[in-house]
Image (cartoon, rainbow, N blue to C red; front, side, top):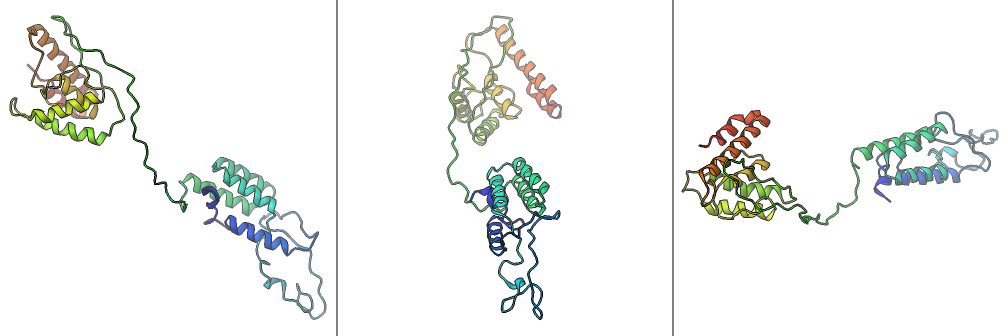
Length: 285
């Protein structure tokens, strides 16, 4: 029995009970005695039983009263109605189940319609009471190959503005990335020369493998390109320690620092609650 069908078990009669009760009551009916269900819904009516003098109403001589027969007080639901209810539940669609409930109610089967609507509500609440064993399979953690590649950085011309590398989103564990980034941030906040470059290098290597630091040298030095990697992780980066590359002119160094200041100012505008932190991070000379 599907999970959707089992939903009726805690509501009203339940599917198994509906079938059992319907079949018992139907088996006890005299032929030709079924009539259209009353406006209140729920059961079928039967022609009155013939009685004899001295015999309690509803009994025949030498027989057990009808009220004590198994299934006599249970609602007699035709198999056709049960089949429709099961088919609606099997869809697992609350809208389809309610649609069938509306049809049953229009035909006079109000109790059965109420059961279907209750099942639809349970479905929308996330299948509570479902006893199906949860899947033990391990979800796939494979990361799709990166389709975006970054061009190798080029040295800016003297006086030209410098832009920081874009950040590429990947499917790697955010917890792992933040752990490595946090360790690197602690070292980057220390005075220059006292930082643990191995931890900064680990952060650079991790991000380069994720596609976020391609084209840059893995040297463990905390510069603006490394600092920019903290931003997409929601972290305000420390001020960079190292600027430029070998043989850069003063104009090139100034362009790189101006680009860093502009980036920190833009982040401060987007994050007013931490605006002071962003401004301190951009206070480079």
